[in-house]
Image (cartoon, rainbow, N blue to C red; front, side, top):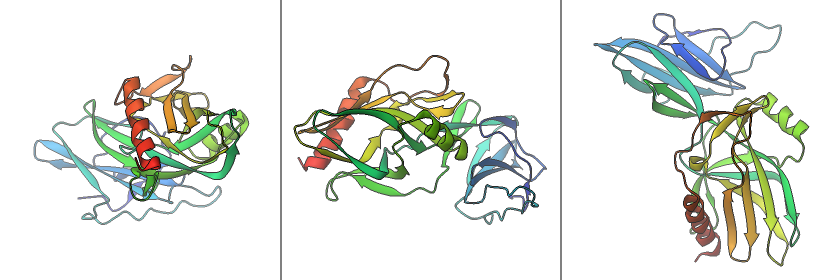
Length: 271
């Protein structure tokens, strides 16, 4: 059974909490997205239920907060996990299991030989952790699928949109306005002899960390090299000093980036 009314009150986005027994559904707000968690007794253990409500997280200053309309108990939006004993649950940021195709809101031309540095952002998922193990991962932005590469042979990706940000002030403003975002510092290099239109960048979160610093969430730096043979992607630098590691990569090794780059190259060139 899912409580009909959520328990109101602001809570930090990430951290650990006791199971919300006998107190209604607990709200965790991430900008205009709300993640609700409820718990019920089930035999010798408990069932933890979680659902994401998109576009319902913000509060208007000076106005009475409205009660969230939760999905019906049988709605597939609820993800249920059995836990054998009472305890805590944690919410930690992570990446989608699919690569993320980030569509630039303002594409630009990169001249032959040109290099540029900046920031792009993708939306995190919330990983619900029980007993030290991930139970379920919930997207904090409404999920859509897309193809990176050609329509016939592209790589299936999670679709997302971003601005290419050149300054730290714009980045901090973006992270402050949307706590769901993970910032990715990037270096772009056009190693080809022709201009390149930069309209999409593909990010493979399975090999990236989620780091936290004073500005918000971020990953390691990424390098994208454009050439006649396609796009090469790799990690470009270690974890910055002063950053706390909230989530480690699920797959390690530079060879994985080489493999992924080859997949994208095949998709773009129809090889």
